[in-house]
Length: 380
Image 1 (tube, rainbow, N blue to C red):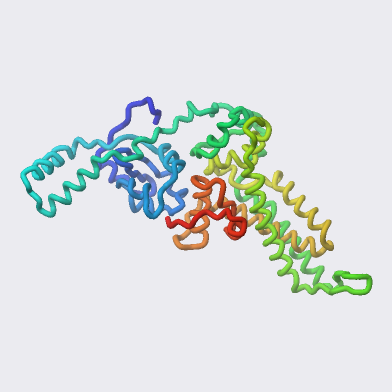
Image 2 (image 1 turned 180 degrees about the vertical axis):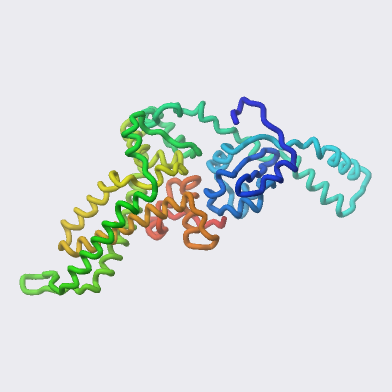
Protein backbone atom coordinates (compact mmCIF):
# COMPACT_ATOMS: atom_id res chain seq x y z
CA UNK A 1 0.00 0.00 0.00
CA UNK A 2 1.35 3.38 -0.95
CA UNK A 3 1.86 5.70 2.03
CA UNK A 4 -0.12 8.39 0.25
CA UNK A 5 -3.25 6.26 -0.32
CA UNK A 6 -6.10 6.11 2.18
CA UNK A 7 -5.91 3.00 4.40
CA UNK A 8 -8.53 0.28 4.27
CA UNK A 9 -10.36 -0.52 7.47
CA UNK A 10 -11.13 -3.98 8.82
CA UNK A 11 -13.26 -5.12 11.73
CA UNK A 12 -11.86 -7.39 14.45
CA UNK A 13 -14.05 -10.19 13.13
CA UNK A 14 -12.62 -9.81 9.62
CA UNK A 15 -9.05 -9.95 10.91
CA UNK A 16 -9.79 -12.99 13.08
CA UNK A 17 -11.09 -14.95 10.07
CA UNK A 18 -7.68 -14.87 8.40
CA UNK A 19 -5.99 -17.58 10.44
CA UNK A 20 -4.88 -20.21 7.90
CA UNK A 21 -1.67 -20.82 6.00
CA UNK A 22 -3.41 -19.54 2.86
CA UNK A 23 -4.45 -16.27 4.50
CA UNK A 24 -2.79 -15.16 7.72
CA UNK A 25 -3.22 -11.69 9.20
CA UNK A 26 -1.84 -10.16 12.40
CA UNK A 27 -2.13 -6.85 14.21
CA UNK A 28 0.41 -4.36 15.53
CA UNK A 29 -1.74 -2.10 17.63
CA UNK A 30 -4.39 -0.94 15.17
CA UNK A 31 -2.34 -1.73 12.06
CA UNK A 32 -3.29 -4.82 10.03
CA UNK A 33 -0.71 -6.96 8.22
CA UNK A 34 -1.16 -9.81 5.77
CA UNK A 35 1.86 -12.01 6.57
CA UNK A 36 0.80 -15.01 4.46
CA UNK A 37 3.83 -14.68 2.18
CA UNK A 38 6.17 -14.51 5.18
CA UNK A 39 5.01 -17.71 6.92
CA UNK A 40 7.66 -20.05 5.56
CA UNK A 41 10.37 -17.41 5.87
CA UNK A 42 9.86 -16.78 9.58
CA UNK A 43 12.83 -18.09 11.60
CA UNK A 44 10.53 -19.24 14.40
CA UNK A 45 8.54 -21.37 12.00
CA UNK A 46 5.12 -21.10 10.40
CA UNK A 47 3.24 -22.43 13.42
CA UNK A 48 4.53 -19.64 15.64
CA UNK A 49 2.88 -16.96 13.52
CA UNK A 50 -0.28 -18.94 12.83
CA UNK A 51 -0.83 -19.42 16.56
CA UNK A 52 -1.01 -15.62 16.83
CA UNK A 53 -3.02 -14.96 13.67
CA UNK A 54 -5.77 -12.40 14.08
CA UNK A 55 -4.14 -11.10 17.26
CA UNK A 56 -1.98 -8.17 18.30
CA UNK A 57 1.67 -9.25 18.21
CA UNK A 58 3.13 -6.00 19.59
CA UNK A 59 4.37 -7.69 22.76
CA UNK A 60 5.99 -10.50 20.77
CA UNK A 61 7.77 -7.96 18.59
CA UNK A 62 9.07 -6.06 21.60
CA UNK A 63 10.01 -9.15 23.61
CA UNK A 64 10.96 -10.83 25.80
CA UNK A 65 12.28 -13.29 24.87
CA UNK A 66 13.24 -11.76 21.51
CA UNK A 67 13.09 -8.07 20.68
CA UNK A 68 12.86 -7.73 16.92
CA UNK A 69 15.35 -5.40 15.24
CA UNK A 70 14.57 -2.21 13.34
CA UNK A 71 15.15 -4.04 10.08
CA UNK A 72 12.67 -6.74 11.08
CA UNK A 73 10.08 -4.08 11.85
CA UNK A 74 10.82 -2.29 8.58
CA UNK A 75 10.40 -5.61 6.76
CA UNK A 76 7.04 -6.06 8.48
CA UNK A 77 5.78 -2.81 6.99
CA UNK A 78 5.86 -4.38 3.53
CA UNK A 79 2.85 -6.49 4.55
CA UNK A 80 0.76 -3.59 5.87
CA UNK A 81 -2.74 -3.64 4.34
CA UNK A 82 -4.84 -1.30 6.48
CA UNK A 83 -6.17 -0.27 9.87
CA UNK A 84 -8.40 -1.86 12.46
CA UNK A 85 -11.91 -0.35 12.60
CA UNK A 86 -12.54 0.20 16.30
CA UNK A 87 -15.92 1.90 15.97
CA UNK A 88 -17.80 -1.37 16.46
CA UNK A 89 -16.39 -1.70 19.98
CA UNK A 90 -16.67 1.99 20.93
CA UNK A 91 -19.99 1.53 22.71
CA UNK A 92 -18.61 -1.30 24.83
CA UNK A 93 -15.54 0.72 25.73
CA UNK A 94 -17.64 3.70 26.76
CA UNK A 95 -19.81 1.51 28.98
CA UNK A 96 -16.75 0.15 30.72
CA UNK A 97 -15.40 3.64 31.36
CA UNK A 98 -18.72 4.69 32.90
CA UNK A 99 -18.74 1.63 35.15
CA UNK A 100 -15.24 2.44 36.29
CA UNK A 101 -16.31 5.99 37.17
CA UNK A 102 -19.18 4.84 39.41
CA UNK A 103 -16.92 2.35 41.21
CA UNK A 104 -17.96 -0.92 39.65
CA UNK A 105 -14.78 -2.86 40.38
CA UNK A 106 -15.93 -6.40 39.74
CA UNK A 107 -13.24 -8.78 38.56
CA UNK A 108 -14.75 -9.26 35.10
CA UNK A 109 -15.14 -5.53 34.54
CA UNK A 110 -11.58 -4.85 35.66
CA UNK A 111 -10.22 -7.34 33.18
CA UNK A 112 -12.33 -5.90 30.36
CA UNK A 113 -11.31 -2.35 31.26
CA UNK A 114 -7.65 -3.31 31.25
CA UNK A 115 -8.08 -4.90 27.84
CA UNK A 116 -9.67 -1.75 26.40
CA UNK A 117 -6.93 0.43 27.88
CA UNK A 118 -4.25 -1.79 26.39
CA UNK A 119 -5.92 -1.65 22.98
CA UNK A 120 -6.11 2.13 23.16
CA UNK A 121 -2.36 2.47 23.76
CA UNK A 122 -0.44 3.72 20.77
CA UNK A 123 1.76 0.91 19.49
CA UNK A 124 5.36 1.96 18.82
CA UNK A 125 5.10 0.13 15.50
CA UNK A 126 2.37 2.50 14.34
CA UNK A 127 5.17 5.05 13.99
CA UNK A 128 7.02 2.91 11.47
CA UNK A 129 6.79 4.37 7.99
CA UNK A 130 5.67 2.11 5.18
CA UNK A 131 8.33 0.99 2.73
CA UNK A 132 7.96 2.97 -0.51
CA UNK A 133 10.38 1.45 -3.00
CA UNK A 134 9.39 3.98 -5.66
CA UNK A 135 11.00 6.69 -3.54
CA UNK A 136 14.07 4.70 -2.58
CA UNK A 137 17.64 5.86 -3.15
CA UNK A 138 17.72 3.80 -6.34
CA UNK A 139 15.30 3.39 -9.22
CA UNK A 140 13.86 -0.12 -8.88
CA UNK A 141 12.45 0.04 -12.39
CA UNK A 142 16.02 -0.09 -13.74
CA UNK A 143 18.92 -2.54 -13.23
CA UNK A 144 20.63 -1.91 -9.91
CA UNK A 145 24.20 -3.02 -10.66
CA UNK A 146 25.28 0.31 -12.11
CA UNK A 147 23.30 2.46 -9.66
CA UNK A 148 24.51 1.33 -6.23
CA UNK A 149 28.06 2.63 -6.69
CA UNK A 150 26.70 6.17 -6.70
CA UNK A 151 25.20 5.78 -3.21
CA UNK A 152 28.59 6.46 -1.62
CA UNK A 153 28.42 6.71 2.16
CA UNK A 154 24.69 5.86 2.08
CA UNK A 155 25.35 2.43 0.57
CA UNK A 156 26.18 0.51 3.75
CA UNK A 157 23.00 1.55 5.56
CA UNK A 158 20.87 1.09 2.43
CA UNK A 159 22.10 -2.40 1.60
CA UNK A 160 21.42 -3.62 5.15
CA UNK A 161 17.78 -2.54 5.05
CA UNK A 162 16.23 -5.68 3.55
CA UNK A 163 13.22 -5.68 1.25
CA UNK A 164 10.96 -8.44 -0.03
CA UNK A 165 11.37 -7.71 -3.71
CA UNK A 166 13.26 -9.43 -6.56
CA UNK A 167 16.36 -7.61 -7.77
CA UNK A 168 17.34 -7.07 -11.38
CA UNK A 169 21.08 -6.54 -11.64
CA UNK A 170 21.61 -6.14 -15.38
CA UNK A 171 19.59 -4.93 -18.33
CA UNK A 172 21.22 -7.48 -20.65
CA UNK A 173 19.14 -10.69 -20.38
CA UNK A 174 22.16 -12.97 -20.83
CA UNK A 175 24.17 -11.29 -18.06
CA UNK A 176 21.10 -11.30 -15.83
CA UNK A 177 20.52 -15.01 -16.44
CA UNK A 178 24.13 -15.83 -15.52
CA UNK A 179 23.58 -14.39 -12.02
CA UNK A 180 20.54 -16.59 -11.33
CA UNK A 181 20.09 -20.28 -10.74
CA UNK A 182 17.65 -22.72 -9.17
CA UNK A 183 18.84 -24.63 -6.11
CA UNK A 184 18.69 -28.05 -7.79
CA UNK A 185 21.36 -27.13 -10.35
CA UNK A 186 23.95 -27.23 -7.59
CA UNK A 187 23.11 -30.90 -7.06
CA UNK A 188 22.86 -31.66 -10.80
CA UNK A 189 26.29 -30.19 -11.57
CA UNK A 190 28.40 -30.99 -8.52
CA UNK A 191 27.09 -34.25 -7.05
CA UNK A 192 28.25 -36.36 -10.05
CA UNK A 193 31.70 -34.83 -9.60
CA UNK A 194 31.66 -35.70 -5.88
CA UNK A 195 30.59 -39.30 -6.55
CA UNK A 196 33.09 -39.85 -9.36
CA UNK A 197 36.09 -38.40 -7.49
CA UNK A 198 35.16 -40.30 -4.34
CA UNK A 199 35.10 -43.55 -6.30
CA UNK A 200 38.36 -42.66 -8.05
CA UNK A 201 40.19 -41.83 -4.81
CA UNK A 202 38.97 -44.88 -2.93
CA UNK A 203 39.77 -47.34 -5.73
CA UNK A 204 43.19 -45.76 -6.26
CA UNK A 205 44.04 -46.07 -2.59
CA UNK A 206 42.65 -49.63 -2.58
CA UNK A 207 45.39 -50.69 -5.01
CA UNK A 208 47.85 -50.39 -2.12
CA UNK A 209 50.52 -48.63 -4.16
CA UNK A 210 50.07 -45.14 -2.76
CA UNK A 211 52.87 -44.02 -0.50
CA UNK A 212 54.03 -40.70 0.94
CA UNK A 213 57.78 -40.21 0.75
CA UNK A 214 58.98 -38.43 3.88
CA UNK A 215 62.69 -38.63 2.99
CA UNK A 216 64.69 -40.28 0.26
CA UNK A 217 64.72 -43.55 2.13
CA UNK A 218 61.50 -43.41 4.12
CA UNK A 219 57.92 -43.68 2.89
CA UNK A 220 54.55 -44.32 4.49
CA UNK A 221 51.79 -46.35 2.79
CA UNK A 222 48.32 -44.80 2.58
CA UNK A 223 45.58 -47.35 3.21
CA UNK A 224 42.21 -47.16 1.47
CA UNK A 225 40.53 -46.65 4.84
CA UNK A 226 42.28 -43.29 5.10
CA UNK A 227 39.96 -41.92 2.44
CA UNK A 228 37.09 -41.08 4.87
CA UNK A 229 39.59 -39.27 7.10
CA UNK A 230 40.96 -37.24 4.20
CA UNK A 231 37.41 -36.58 2.99
CA UNK A 232 36.36 -35.19 6.38
CA UNK A 233 39.54 -33.13 6.62
CA UNK A 234 38.63 -31.50 3.32
CA UNK A 235 35.09 -30.86 4.54
CA UNK A 236 36.43 -29.29 7.73
CA UNK A 237 38.82 -27.15 5.69
CA UNK A 238 35.90 -25.98 3.55
CA UNK A 239 33.96 -24.87 6.66
CA UNK A 240 36.88 -22.56 7.48
CA UNK A 241 37.02 -21.26 3.90
CA UNK A 242 33.25 -20.71 4.01
CA UNK A 243 33.67 -18.58 7.13
CA UNK A 244 36.58 -16.57 5.70
CA UNK A 245 34.88 -15.86 2.37
CA UNK A 246 31.67 -14.78 4.09
CA UNK A 247 33.44 -12.57 6.61
CA UNK A 248 36.34 -11.04 4.71
CA UNK A 249 35.07 -10.99 1.12
CA UNK A 250 31.28 -10.89 1.24
CA UNK A 251 31.22 -8.55 4.24
CA UNK A 252 34.06 -6.25 3.35
CA UNK A 253 33.02 -2.64 3.86
CA UNK A 254 33.82 -0.90 0.59
CA UNK A 255 35.17 2.66 0.81
CA UNK A 256 32.36 5.17 0.40
CA UNK A 257 34.23 6.98 -2.40
CA UNK A 258 35.02 3.86 -4.46
CA UNK A 259 32.28 3.24 -7.04
CA UNK A 260 33.81 0.00 -8.32
CA UNK A 261 34.31 -1.68 -4.93
CA UNK A 262 30.75 -0.80 -3.90
CA UNK A 263 29.47 -2.30 -7.15
CA UNK A 264 31.62 -5.41 -6.66
CA UNK A 265 30.38 -5.86 -3.09
CA UNK A 266 26.77 -5.55 -4.22
CA UNK A 267 27.24 -8.13 -6.97
CA UNK A 268 29.02 -10.58 -4.66
CA UNK A 269 26.80 -10.38 -1.61
CA UNK A 270 25.15 -7.00 -1.08
CA UNK A 271 22.21 -7.88 -3.31
CA UNK A 272 21.55 -10.93 -1.11
CA UNK A 273 21.33 -8.78 2.01
CA UNK A 274 19.11 -6.26 0.25
CA UNK A 275 16.71 -8.97 -0.94
CA UNK A 276 17.39 -12.04 1.24
CA UNK A 277 14.40 -14.00 -0.03
CA UNK A 278 15.09 -13.71 -3.74
CA UNK A 279 14.99 -17.44 -4.43
CA UNK A 280 16.88 -17.22 -7.71
CA UNK A 281 20.02 -15.90 -6.00
CA UNK A 282 20.32 -18.01 -2.85
CA UNK A 283 22.84 -20.48 -4.30
CA UNK A 284 25.90 -19.88 -6.46
CA UNK A 285 25.49 -20.35 -10.21
CA UNK A 286 27.76 -23.31 -11.13
CA UNK A 287 29.72 -21.20 -13.62
CA UNK A 288 30.72 -18.66 -10.98
CA UNK A 289 31.19 -21.31 -8.29
CA UNK A 290 33.66 -23.16 -10.52
CA UNK A 291 36.13 -20.29 -10.03
CA UNK A 292 36.20 -20.87 -6.25
CA UNK A 293 36.14 -24.67 -6.69
CA UNK A 294 38.99 -24.57 -9.21
CA UNK A 295 41.10 -22.33 -6.98
CA UNK A 296 40.55 -24.68 -4.02
CA UNK A 297 41.66 -27.63 -6.18
CA UNK A 298 44.81 -25.92 -7.47
CA UNK A 299 45.92 -24.87 -3.99
CA UNK A 300 45.54 -28.41 -2.64
CA UNK A 301 47.33 -29.99 -5.60
CA UNK A 302 50.23 -27.59 -5.26
CA UNK A 303 50.76 -28.40 -1.59
CA UNK A 304 49.94 -32.13 -1.28
CA UNK A 305 50.58 -35.35 -3.23
CA UNK A 306 48.01 -35.77 -5.98
CA UNK A 307 45.80 -38.49 -4.48
CA UNK A 308 45.77 -36.88 -1.04
CA UNK A 309 44.91 -33.53 -2.59
CA UNK A 310 42.03 -34.95 -4.60
CA UNK A 311 40.71 -36.87 -1.58
CA UNK A 312 40.60 -33.69 0.48
CA UNK A 313 39.26 -31.71 -2.46
CA UNK A 314 36.25 -33.96 -2.93
CA UNK A 315 35.47 -33.64 0.78
CA UNK A 316 35.62 -29.88 0.49
CA UNK A 317 33.46 -29.95 -2.63
CA UNK A 318 30.87 -32.01 -0.81
CA UNK A 319 31.01 -29.49 2.03
CA UNK A 320 30.33 -26.70 -0.46
CA UNK A 321 27.28 -28.51 -1.87
CA UNK A 322 25.91 -29.02 1.65
CA UNK A 323 26.62 -25.35 2.40
CA UNK A 324 24.59 -24.12 -0.57
CA UNK A 325 21.70 -26.48 0.21
CA UNK A 326 21.63 -25.50 3.89
CA UNK A 327 21.80 -21.81 3.01
CA UNK A 328 18.78 -22.18 0.74
CA UNK A 329 16.90 -24.14 3.40
CA UNK A 330 17.67 -21.57 6.10
CA UNK A 331 15.83 -18.99 4.00
CA UNK A 332 12.91 -21.08 2.78
CA UNK A 333 12.68 -24.15 5.00
CA UNK A 334 10.65 -24.69 8.16
CA UNK A 335 12.85 -26.80 10.45
CA UNK A 336 11.39 -28.42 13.54
CA UNK A 337 11.64 -26.28 16.65
CA UNK A 338 14.59 -27.30 18.80
CA UNK A 339 16.45 -29.00 15.93
CA UNK A 340 19.96 -28.11 14.78
CA UNK A 341 18.66 -26.50 11.60
CA UNK A 342 16.11 -24.51 13.58
CA UNK A 343 18.95 -22.98 15.60
CA UNK A 344 20.93 -22.27 12.43
CA UNK A 345 17.93 -20.61 10.78
CA UNK A 346 17.35 -18.33 13.77
CA UNK A 347 21.08 -17.54 13.86
CA UNK A 348 21.23 -16.73 10.16
CA UNK A 349 18.11 -14.57 10.19
CA UNK A 350 19.60 -12.54 13.05
CA UNK A 351 22.69 -12.09 10.88
CA UNK A 352 20.54 -10.64 8.10
CA UNK A 353 18.28 -8.43 10.16
CA UNK A 354 20.29 -7.36 13.18
CA UNK A 355 23.91 -8.52 13.40
CA UNK A 356 25.36 -8.02 9.92
CA UNK A 357 28.91 -7.74 11.31
CA UNK A 358 28.71 -11.07 13.13
CA UNK A 359 27.35 -14.59 12.65
CA UNK A 360 29.30 -15.49 9.52
CA UNK A 361 28.94 -19.25 9.87
CA UNK A 362 26.26 -20.87 7.70
CA UNK A 363 26.52 -24.64 8.10
CA UNK A 364 28.05 -24.29 11.55
CA UNK A 365 28.67 -21.56 14.11
CA UNK A 366 31.97 -23.19 15.14
CA UNK A 367 34.36 -20.67 13.58
CA UNK A 368 32.46 -17.68 14.96
CA UNK A 369 33.54 -18.55 18.49
CA UNK A 370 37.36 -18.55 18.22
CA UNK A 371 37.22 -15.43 16.04
CA UNK A 372 34.84 -13.66 18.43
CA UNK A 373 32.10 -13.03 15.85
CA UNK A 374 29.38 -15.17 17.45
CA UNK A 375 25.92 -13.64 17.77
CA UNK A 376 24.81 -13.48 21.43
CA UNK A 377 22.53 -16.35 22.34
CA UNK A 378 18.90 -15.31 22.41
CA UNK A 379 15.81 -17.44 22.52
CA UNK A 380 13.14 -17.06 19.86
